Image 1 (cartoon, helix red, strand yellow):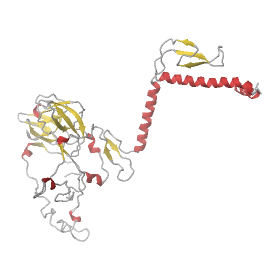
Image 2 (cartoon, rainbow, N blue to C red):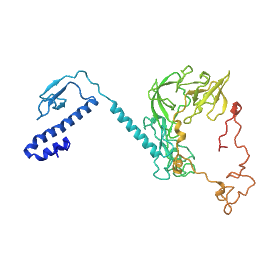
Image 3 (cartoon, rainbow, N blue to C red):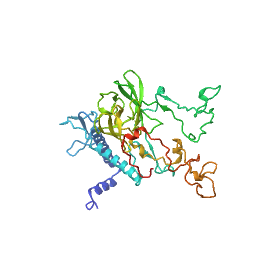
Image 4 (cartoon, rainbow, N blue to C red):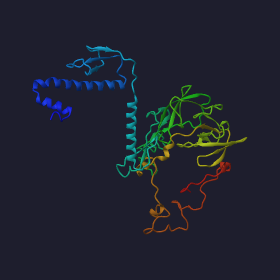
Length: 418
């Protein structure tokens, strides 16, 4: 059996035929070999991560003679052995680390693709909600990753209170839309019911701080607009809020001057802007403050100029003339992904202050001119009417604007819009 078996079988058979006293040296040698393997593995890991420095000390294993085939035990501390200096210092290899990182990234990417199942992927600034219920399915929210703080600058923030009546013998704060003791109860108005409380931030749309450099301190959230705002500190110590543009970062220097450089965030007159430059926060008339291209992702393009006017292409594809003395800001309003947000349910629209619109034919006759009747009845009028009984079809309800004569090309009407 020994002659026919393998060497491993022969060694095992030898151990089985030996007694306890004869097996002790062999067991000690095998245990020592396992310890040596573990030590070699630990030393290799330390060399990979760059923690094995200096010379290596080698000592023969206990119980094993220093013969030609004897194995050695490697340690990082000097033991009672022979000192061996390496021929050349070995640099740590970071290839295994990079391989592990790449594998982990690939696994995470495959997990995202598997969970998406053909749905729109999450982009920068937008996070798709998990479909835990029907309201959250296919809905997305903002990540607010561009905001640097949650605190606002109190001197430029206040609760916007609109007065509806003149109180007698009471403080003026009593008659406001946001107060419980107001004459209209608490959020009982049709247009205000359900809206979340908001504080207004005073925005510097005029950029009237001329020839002074300002430093962007924070990027903040503004509940009154879908774009972000930045808190700017000027050289004289004054703080102002400006619109956040693409490319803004904390610590950036901006200036409002007639000879300002063409850089994102700088404000200057339209006649100083090069042709083809993207601008935002444009004044319709000089000294009136920015009124055009202030929403998230909005921008206009300067097309040409003459002696009095500058031709600008609006975000709505309208081309019009604007006085060359009007000021604008270089760049594009930030948060271009705002149009990708899907609310998902009616409650979110309610929190934003958007009340539902009820059809007139669905109301009673006392509430609307189209109301009343049995079931799905016609409006009962010769032409559509407003809830006040006036003509609502074909009658001009907008007065002619003075600036309409400066429109060169009308905007292209989008599909589904009047």
